[in-house]
Image 1 (cartoon, rainbow, N blue to C red):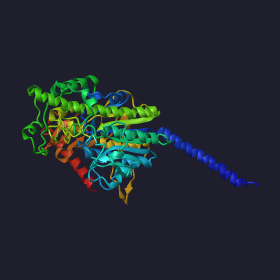
Image 2: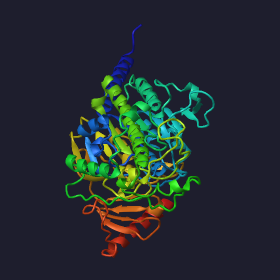
Image 3: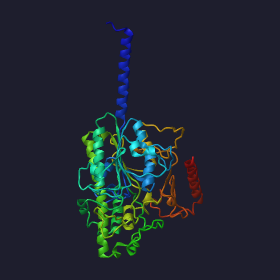
Image 4: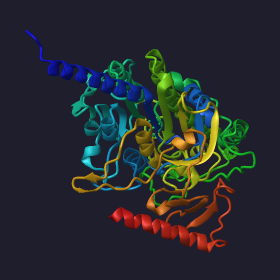
Length: 520
């Protein structure tokens, strides 16, 4: 049968167009990196090696040496607002907020989330992990790290949209330890998506190193006895190392040691004499030998949790290398807030470490964790709101860079869309979507500076921080705002509110405009 000439032409044109279109898709995919976003929980500014710590974090140090560290990178100073802002790109949003998982999926990425979901109430249902990500293993605010392997466990885990019983958790190590088996699921999902031609986006929001202080014994033994020298010495050693590695400037001054003055955080009602001491700063040499032993163990367990976190980050990096993906992957690491000193302890008869213990860091160790800054989680001061940020991308980011540019957790979503060539919708359910509060970090990654005004907020409302360019207005316990020039005074030692009342008013007016925008 003779085929009509026009059909031959149609077939030829179709093949050419298909090849061109496929080539464009392949070129676009090759041009876009895979993305791994890792979030730690309650890890302070100096709690990892490349920011001054004695804790062994060789994998994070490797990312820092091969990439970029920020001296100033802000979060929202508490778990749930930080994670809500990260997910949506908004300091505070509404039911039209968009999820980074959905947007990256629409941009053509395979999407994975493994870890902790902890959102503010304003975050809409569509942003939940099972609705946002193609693959997900997640839980909501389960603080225990050791999970019982048999019997009933009242806190559910979720595999996609279904609840997963503890007995059905697929874990490589026993006893079940959350940091480990969350990574197990991430690695399994990576094996699946790496068979596809599409780039992938992996979000790993770990729970480590939030209280309770629970860790594997082999990790604890690495640190037991190393903190007998006390928090005063550890803080000085970390500050000295920070200057040596360049993460703080040579003329930076160490803030004075202090306890937690948050009168809005109460204590559980037992063991009152002991609880009186938990929020206080005390000189280490004034403590009894018994107290020193107990507090050495407390910090050793925390260090073990950070160590185990780093080990699992190393497992992810090893997997990417094994799959030949690491060179074309943007890896970002951050923490949701500074170190946490709040007394949520239970049963002091069980020491920190094993399953069943429920102990927290005291103010002395949390203060050391936030070296060289003041205050803690929930505070808008640098100790609560400024934490490590590392970006590693061999094809784009110069090795061993430390930047003075300021970033914010709200910048992550715009960065993802920029890097992944995604778009942000203008309308949701017939109404305008909220305008993103952040902007892409790409100009900084490429050794440049971002232009225009810098406006960031952080801290809980009673501890709100408003950063406007180099000025920072921050309050404590709803008191009058304190004003600092962060460029000149990064550790917030000199309140200049009385000297510059016009700057205070400008910042308040700028904040009011933001509040009005949120109501829309």
